[in-house]
Image 1 (cartoon, one colour):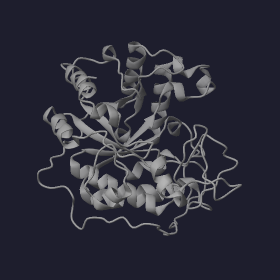
Image 2 (cartoon, rainbow, N blue to C red; image 1 turned 180 degrees about the horizontal axis):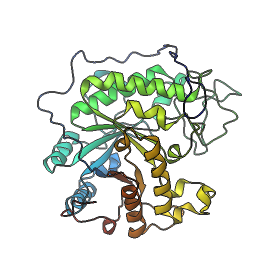
Image 3 (cartoon, one colour; image 1 turned 60 degrees about the vertical axis):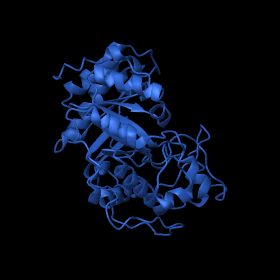
Length: 366
């Protein structure tokens, strides 16, 4: 068959050369004491790092913000780009790997507190950008093509796991199952792509070599779906914002139509500051939040016409390319509604959000 991006698609199975075996439980990890909230519709969320979620002072301020406004959900890091897991996990295999860090020492208490307030809890897992796992398993890492024993680094000096590595897939699935058993209502997967920034002329993928990048990701998405289906977990995926307007894979393997069948929600990161100066002739897209988000999400609606409400964008609430005012944040939210969507999530890496951009909690209409 031929995908919308124009490249030939074919079914294949990546070689299963696992370097480590991750043990899965024979029965569901979640017990009858774990109650998962249903996904709120519309969903309106903010992102919290593991460090913020672990600080009682900082998280309480953000919980107060949710209580006072239209917000009804949070996205909390399970595992970020460093590869460190934000809280201790009892699974012996994960303990042996040592990736847990005590950022959130009371994760069960925190989730229960949020649930008591009817706040939906999404756990974010950075899949293939993972400094810790690269250090533990350098054989799984992206390498330099000129020296295939040397680990490749991007412009920020960060290392990447090869997206085709089955051992990594097993690790992500195990971490996802254990996190869902702790009470997270939804599992969100980020950095589900190949690298984009660095010396792309000197890069080698030891596990994906010879395969089309979108097909490697299709296999990974299918693997996640099939191995997590029995848990009943809601699954979501973060994609580059330009996946809504580009029909190629942006050289990172991400194609909207490839991801759509395997996830309950797709979250394109339509941050206006992340678009090139040439985008729809705007010069500085960051200065035009409504126009960028509306154009991008109109395209997403057209391409997801059979399942449009799977689209749930990330919106910008941080200063990059422009100083973001409450009006600029609100303009993105309005553009989301005007494009035919109802749910959205706000991103700020520092977790400092703009209260005046949000409606009060008594307002229930769009």
